Length: 143
Image (cartoon, rainbow, N blue to C red; front, side, top):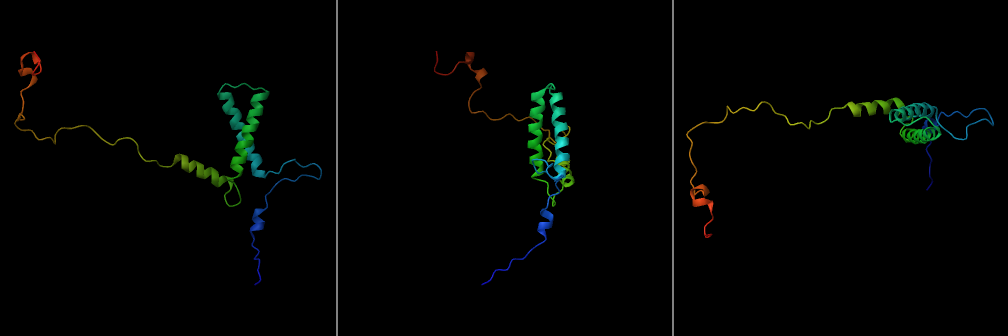
């Protein structure tokens, strides 16, 4: 039995568009072009949130912002590929945020009593005497 390997065109799409740079002057990491844009937006967002929280601009705040930027960029980079580009991920996120939700508020309106039938008041039959009818409101058997 012989095995036949069928070659597909998937390898064409697996090639990432990365900047390799000139010889001996490349970055020490491989990143797609879209990752640099996502990283820039993530860094701006993280630094903006830090300023709004009252965190000052010093070495450690910038270092933590860089760490959070790398984490956010890697997280988004795992979800972006040639089948799902960045624009589609952003559109999907915006549709999820603005999409219709089930109503949790109770539906109701003005309370009306027009549907209640009115008639003569009928007292319910009592099997034992009311407490107020007994002397002093004491229980039986106590003296």
